Image (tube, rainbow, N blue to C red; front, top):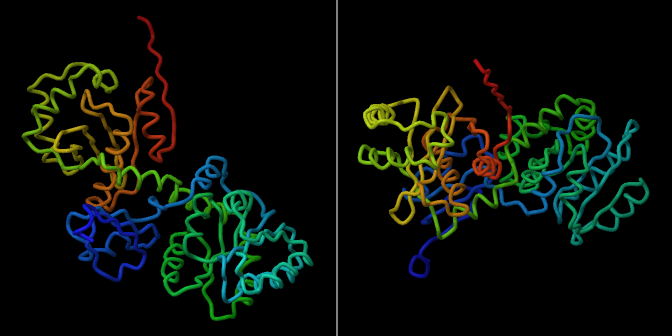
Amino acid sequence: MRSCVKKIFVIDDLADRVHDCDWLLDQNYYRDAESRYVNKVPAHCCCLIGPRYALLRKEFMAARNQAALRAGPVNRVLLFFGGVDKDNLTGRALHVLAAMRSRSFRVDVVIGNMHPFIDEIRECCCRQGFDCHIQTDRMAVLMAQADMAIGAGGTAVLERWCLGLPTIAFATAENQMRQVGDAAREGLLYAPDGHETFEETLEKHLPALVDNMPLREHMSFQAMAVVDGLGLSRVAALLDDDVVQIRPACLSDSREIFEWRNHPDIRRFCGDPGVIPWEMHEQWFKGILSSTTSVLLIGYREMAPVGVVRYDFIDSDARVSIYLVPGQEKKGLGRKLLLRAEIWLKNHRGDIRKIRARIMAGNGRSRALFEGSGYHEESASFLKELQP
């Protein structure tokens, strides 16, 4: 393909082969996700690893905006084991649900129109008063309405996480076993581990999860933090022809950064809006280049600088500040710069777990930038100056 195209984008979830590509996406959750493609892609390859790049349909983002943390009782359960479900785990789970004497919740059952046991499942749902949905296009709505799910691994896991839906999950394929196991260890889902049959396992663990409201609330919180629904837009922005590259600042950048930082459009939204003298800037710049607790990154496009991103590190947190080079205020450019900087951060500081940003009052553009990049508001600060 190198003789036919300029760029190659690979989507993988196995990490069992070498790729010649410029981008690689693996949207699945693994505890060692960052090391799975070491020596499997070229040095220049941009790796998009983990659920923050999950390619979910737009209806999940729409439902996400209305989704709430699952903190109450279980009134509705969603049962879905994929469109085909060759082992008929759907039908087998239905028998367990039908036999639950303490069941007080409504059940939504989803199957594809090619399910090998479609007639039996439809008949069982009718007999038990369950709602059967065949080849539905309302999956996001059903997930948002449910308080808990029973299902398989795979892409459906990412969809449930996006909507904060606690799940009792079963690996239905070999390549799902590690994914489900790793997610369970991080509290993202509930994966029973035993040697009983599927029916025995579900019969034992389902009531336990239904009755454990704190655990379901914890899973819901963890899941929504891992998948924010912005993965599609992140990937689209990074694949844009108008791509932004990132590199650490070097000594030769000092003069330009000095001029950008002192530009009136940049100063008015800084903590200190005054003009920085050259001597003070030079001392600060040399310090930050040698710092182990801060990093200064330059974003550039077609060899021209477009913006600056700074991270300050405290334990596993990073505080970010960002500005575009004056005159480079192209729509969407700030978001591309911020996303590229986050990829650099993940590749070079794998210990960082949270990124925080401080926005000055009145800076609506920065607020929109961070809200559109998956940040959520944590607190607000107020200031009142007293007259002498």
